[in-house]
Image (cartoon, rainbow, N blue to C red; front, side, top):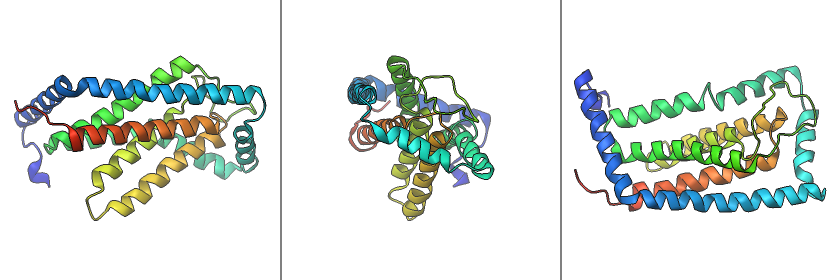
Length: 236
């Protein structure tokens, strides 16, 4: 496998240029399809956000507060440390470094189409999350004083989207290998623990997590279908 890696800075530059050229040809041919899928995903997110807001106002959306209080009652100092760690692994300590490492490895080994898919999946998911948070501007839960407070908006959960995006993309990339089931189990467990940590810490409603999962999975599967399975990319 290491024989495929660039052996010099000049070769690394050529590989990076080839990856960039591949991506530019894809965007010229299929960028409008990506943009269409992006905005199509905002519509169900908008509908979900409106529904959740109305049900909260009518006090009939009980599972959000029930799950928050249930996990808070489960708290101990040891569990506090564990879920704070999982929360950190779900962003700066884990998901972001893994995203960068996987993307660089795919590019360095000249897996241009998988590399393009992974980059679009990760970056597009992050942009979708930022756009949705800014638009919906949902405040975070305030049922108790969190040991890891957050000040940004709540809906949808960025940690849930980031970990689910990474997990789904890795599973799809490895699906035709013999390691697909171990990877699926580990990736799914990681995304679940990261997401549960956000509820346990009291910084997200469960509905924020659910919306993050659904948006991430829909975006990644859509990009996989377009980039890996469907798109014909013109030659240089």
